[in-house]
Image 1 (cartoon, rainbow, N blue to C red):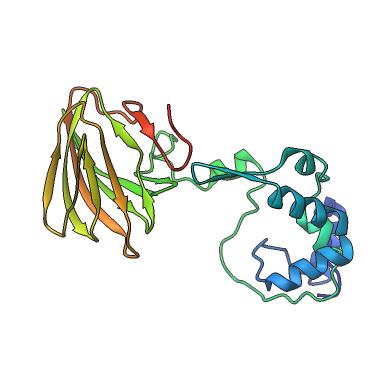
Image 2 (image 1 turned 90 degrees about the vertical axis):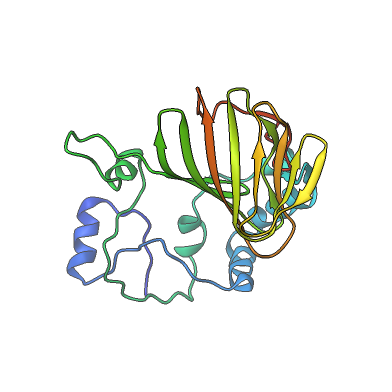
Length: 236
């Protein structure tokens, strides 16, 4: 790369295109020491403040809270302006794929599929700190989901006021809590969580835990959850 220019105006961008310049996709691959060395050379003050904010951070319920005093002193400047425009050691690879610069909510909205009435189709996959869940099928009074709990992760110690749940393990070996009972389940084994019971899934192993969950009840909403303990700091 001879020169990198962040967000040129329209006329300048047209000149760059005529010169057969390439559009930056924002996809970067870099060695950790290379990024640090560039910060030392071009943004040493920012680097020091970042290090201070991390070293002085506090940990609570497995969540890191950066030290505010140092963090607030960091200048509001993009990585592209701060480093890429100044760096002398950049190489580019031509990429021929559909691409859009998701720099606004309008651009983000444009990537979602719409139905015939131009309404956005609802996604059925939802990501959480512990993994993800997929809504597979629903009907009156029931909902079928797949839960994937990542290694060394757990859902909240929680209860639901309006629904019961049936779990069937399809992968991994979860540790399950139901009220005062704690036990492990293997693949193809099931368990029942009565409405109002305090429960939790923990994955203590490397292999992801996968569970088919069937919810039954009059109200089947994510808002129906009371958290008692959560390693990600999401207690009600």
